[in-house]
Every structure is written in C-alpha cells, then in structure tokens.
Length: 379
Image 1 (tube, rainbow, N blue to C red):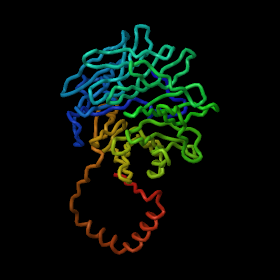
Image 2: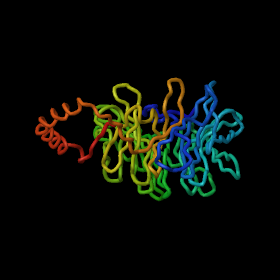
Image 3: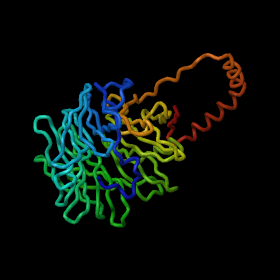
Image 4: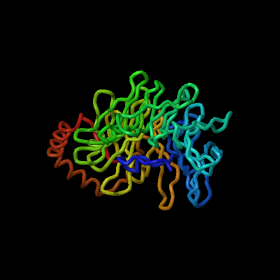
C-alpha cells in the first residue's frame, strides 16, 4: 500500500470513486459501478472528456485490479509482474498513470497507453514509486523513495525519467498535482519536521505555500492551468479547513462552510473547487465552491467521497451502499427539490411575512459580516 501522510487525514488521501460517464456532460447519470459482479467494488480515479474512466476493481478478497471503463466494457491494464495495481489519473489522450506491483511485490509508478501497454517509470533509487497526476501532454507527477528510504516528489522529464523535486528542508515530499505549465503541487517536510503545502515551478524550485492563520501543517492536492491551488490546512483551533490559494492570498473555504473538517480535492479550469466535509462525525458530504458561492450537498444528493470536477462541471466520486463503494457522479449544480402544495403552506407564509422585517434585518447584518461576502448553501 502507498504510504499515508502522517499529518493528513485518511479521508482526503484514500482512493476515490466516480461514475462511468459516456461523455463530459454535467447531466446526472444513474449508473453505479462498472458492472462488476456481486461482492466486488469499483473504484475510479479520473475521467477524461471522451468518457473513458480510469479506475480499479476491488475484489471481495481485497485484491485490486487496474482498469479502464467505457461504454459498459472493462479493460484490464495488468500489472508490472506482481499481483495488484491501481490507477490515479488519465489525460485527454487516454494515457493512464498509477502504480502496480512488480514480481518482488514492490509498488512502481506506471504509464499505460493502448499502443505500448504498461511502462514502469522506475524510482529515485529506492524500491517504490507512485504516480498521482498527468497532463494532456503526458508529463507525470508523483513520489518515489530514494536510496535513503525517504519519499521525494517527482515530475517526469521528456524521456520519462524521474526528476527529484527535493523537499522544504526535511526528509520527505509528495506531489499530488501538476498543470500544463509544469507547475507541481503537493506536501513537503520542513527542517522543523512540520509538513507544508508546496508549489514547484520550473526554474524557481520548491516554495512553501504556508497555512491558514494559526495552523501548523497543510497539504496541496490540485492545481489548474491558471495557477489556482487547492488543498487543506490546519487552523488555529486544530481543525482541518479546505483552502484555495491564488498565489497572493489563501481563501479559507472551511470557514465558508462554518462547521466540520473539510478537504479540497480538485479544481477545474474555471476555478470551481470540490471536496469533502465531515460534520460532527457523520458521513462526509460533498461541497462545491463556484462563483463565490459555497454549496454543501445533501447526503442523499451528493457523494460519500469526492474526487474530481471535470471542466464540464461533473463532480465525480463515490457513494457507499453500506457494504461497498460504488462509482457515481453528480452535476455540480444541485437538482431542485420537488415541492408539493400543502394548505398549511399558506399559514406558514403568513407567519413568515409578519416576521419579515426582523428576518431581513438579520440577514442583511449577517451578510455584511460574512467572510469576503461569500454565501453558503446547504442543499
């Protein structure tokens, strides 16, 4: 199994699921999973504009198989000679990246394309590596262990070899996203042992992003081509809040939600951010931040795990059936709630109108005091 961030909660680091969508439409699709047999679960990590899903099949016994899925058909990607594999990302050309076991049982990052099959990307001198992101031009980011046994973030060079991105002065670093300009984001350890979100720019090197006020640790998870970075940071109250960083300021998305622990997991070309929020220990819900509005989806209208948001506005993730995960997706715009007329509604409306003066005054005051004037809706 890939190593976990010691400082970062498992809900954000786990593999996340999505629906098998035959196109990049934002329409809700009812299909769940990849058509796997009873007892098995389906996990998908990414979806490209052609509707090709990169994912895995989780067998009931626990074995994972790297697959792609489209138009009702599963394609097995195989391994690097071992028993298991899983995918993490796919680009517009259908090139898939992830990790698979070698004959010795070690995990190695791979690149898979239809013409050439699965290619081992190697390591940074150690025994294992993991690919986490790929751009449309085929550049890959991830992390691999060095000869000293510490994981370092990497990005691939033109010949597909791994370039060590270093750390922030500590022992380890992990890359989780990159854009078409070669800018990489992730998490790296400082000399004092704390782990911080980083941004790596070609020619500039690795720089720390920082944390929300009072926080000690942070992690960046994704970046778009405009340079908007998302992730999560500890707060002064030792809670986790999702954030968006544009290079000048860090917007506290968790404060817009107002409660719970939140983690931003993806951002699309338009700057729309998605992630998960867990409130009072209940199962996580999906949040969507777009055009200055924060929306938290109802549990019956969202995802248990939230992974990506496509440029077309489709939020991909997973539902949980009570015994296994199944792939699913929802549009970023919540569906309207059906309303049935009821005679008692008129009584309620009369009461609300009589109290409208007080309500409007409080709403106006609270809006003026809101953070950056943004709004939050619980759907």
